Length: 79
Image (cartoon, rainbow, N blue to C red; front, top):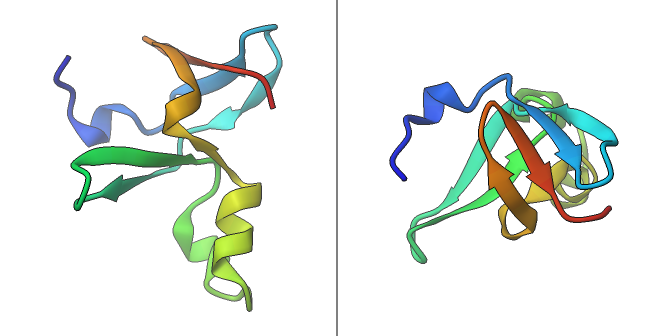
């Protein structure tokens, strides 16, 4: 499936049991592995004031590996 990154922003993310986690605000790409790494639930600029950006990303993102279904709503495993 091919999709523009700009089409991802604002899509709702739900767990498989229907719990709302948030909306996609940013996407982290891993260029070395040529894959999407994380879907962020906050804008990356919100993390700039944090002393530990990695921790903030971990707390406010979903690993793309958890995605089960990708449509108008994104369904992910657990959390």
